Image (cartoon, rainbow, N blue to C red; front, top):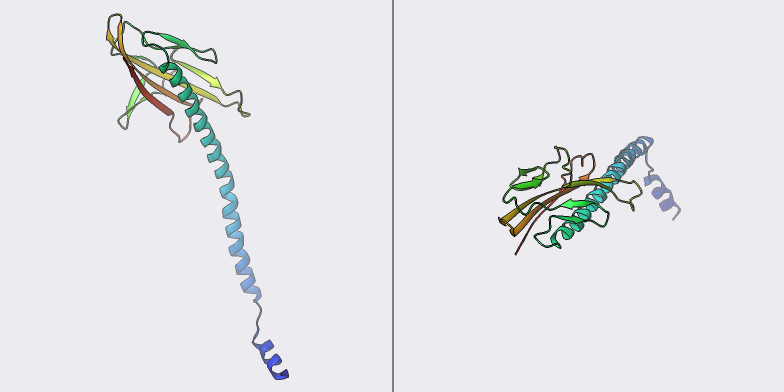
Length: 177
């Protein structure tokens, strides 16, 4: 039995210093790579929050626009902004913020300046970073003199100053009799 114990001890080997160094380097490379993902993740999370806020703001405004009768030419938001909704005498013409077609979708052209009455800048009072949002819309009305038949609204919202690689939120709806 004594012979067996001595033999098993001779067959056991520990890790060499070189193997430990290689394992440490591999572990450190993994930890450094993981640490670099944290700031990227935080930045993407912040941008997603901003895009979500833009979408909620755009949906709320679009609902306010859709809730008024077709003959109404302006609506005041709960924040106190007066928003023009086109003209009951100008038909089949884009009024308000300039639009462009991108990927077969009509969107607001944020490269051009804001148009008074068809845009505003809003800061979320609940947001600790006080992010401002650029909100713009365009209206196309159809009908005949004094008889509005439909109203198409193209609404865009984004963080004021640009969204970086993210496109602005765009909503497009039509209300008809």
